[in-house]
Length: 226
Ligand code: CTP
Ligand code: MG
Image (cartoon, rainbow, N blue to C red; front, side, top):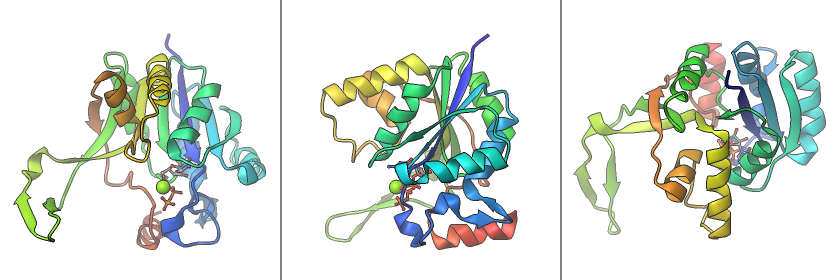
């Protein structure tokens, strides 16, 4: 039986939220945002949860894990200045054959997404939750001119969890660090496996509700929905 680890990321500063409290700790209906996804992973088939946060929020996370009875949380570790470094610190504590890397800023991940993701990992080394984009997407050129529209039906937004065979994603990060890859251009974990080994992730259905809380508008949406 394969074991699964969820790595929940909560080491960001939330600069676009412009709030004093980092967004993942803002309370919504009496519960910090980070606690929502922790609870969903707790009641899933995941075996271990590793929580990554900034050095100065480790105590705060300890209390949250205790208050919300996140018994599967084995480790609370310090993250890094970049998301990729936070992921790597989490990977060091992960023991599962599979790892699900999740943005702590996506509180409404569903049990269904987690289940489908783990199921797909049986056949694929990399899996990602995706949603079709709703707006028509266009590039704007150097002189501010609109380029041709991109066929919308082929476009999808990448959500998390992004999930991997643990040894493969560790190997991929090691390779890119050795090659001094530019992590400012590698914005998610799916790109890490692509850049390192040319392995594309298998898409599973994400959900509009699994939205990342990034700006005050997203927070207002979350408050209106829970
Ligand atoms: N994250 C992290 N470590 C970092 C940067 C981000 O663990 N060095 C986490 C965030 O806490 C968040 C997730 O990665 O749960 C997605 O990142 P994002 O939405 O960009 O959050 P922030 O980086 O905190 O926000 P911003 O970019 O607005 O500063
Ligand atoms: Mg960020």
